[in-house]
Amino acid sequence: MTPPRSGDADADPWTEDDSGRAGAPGGGAGRGGAAEDPRVTAEAARVEAAQQARTAEAVPVDRALSVSVAGFAALLAVGLVLGAQGIGLGAGRLPYVAVILGVQLLFILASTMAMRPPAMPAVAGVSVLVALGADLAAVLPDEASLAKLGLVAAAGFGLSVLAQLLRPSDRERVTESLGATLMIVIGVVAFATLVVLTRKPGGTQTLTLCLTAAGVALVVARLVDPVSASPRLAPQVPRGALGVVLGAMLGTAAGAVLGSSLVAPFTPTNGAVLGLLCACAAVLTDLGANYAEAGRLMAGDPPTFWIARHMQGPIAGLALAAPVAYVGNVLFLVPFGGV
Image 1 (spheres, rainbow, N blue to C red):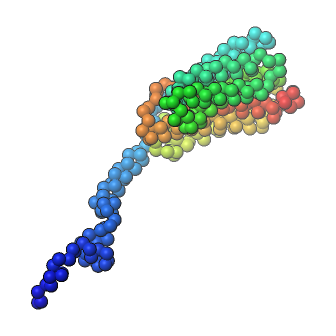
Image 2 (cartoon, rainbow, N blue to C red; image 1 turned 30 degrees about the vertical axis):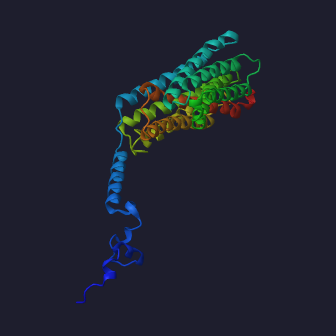
Image 3 (cartoon, rainbow, N blue to C red; image 1 turned 90 degrees about the vertical axis):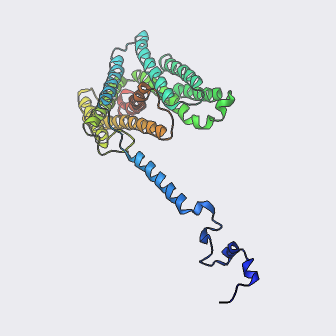
């Protein structure tokens, strides 16, 4: 063997990385850094697999909670339906306005505590003012119309955004709060449409049919979940598709039964159509509230007050059913001046 030359002894072996020789120290990771380290990659894969395993665990269904929420939905629907039956002329409508205002306050409490928008006290305060303004706009004018409710909703939304812009700490999060604020304001005004509906010819009958169908759907969906919460729509959401489907079906059936017993122009057919629309709106909104709560928990947000987050779904479901009932009145009561 020939002795090594002096030039070879002085050579830096790490410079041979640039030549691309397979035997060079460091190999292909020379300039890639620690990001290419197999140990780091394996550790990241292990952590990701553990996180996926935790998120894939199905959240158990609390039977007592499901029954309690079903009972709350039933009481809420019965209160809204029976309150409308005793409406008379003039001051006879004010007791129902008081019932609507109470439901609106529950909706504001549940929604603000669940979504926690920036400047939450300001948003809640403005929402209460919107509730009062919408109820007055629904009961005081000589002609019942949704136009004034729309103006109240627009003014309330603008005032809520302005209240958040006045505080620097809330101004940074104003964009993410627009959706939550808009949902609260629209939900509050939606309940006021029930007051307007009672002032329309045949509106009380439409209200009875639609809210009964929505209430039946909510109650059935919640009661089926403890029996069989399968197939699971998402492992993080303790709800099953079977309850949602059965709730919509029995809500439709309730609408058909009431449609056959109410006066013309109601029939089992249009009663079933209205029942289907209101039942689907109610159960899907209720389900959406569960998904939103699960998303907040997965994002690391602290859980909200448990009464508020479990009230939010049924109240929001009935809030969405209210404008659907108004549209149904317009579509099916044309001979009675529904338009």
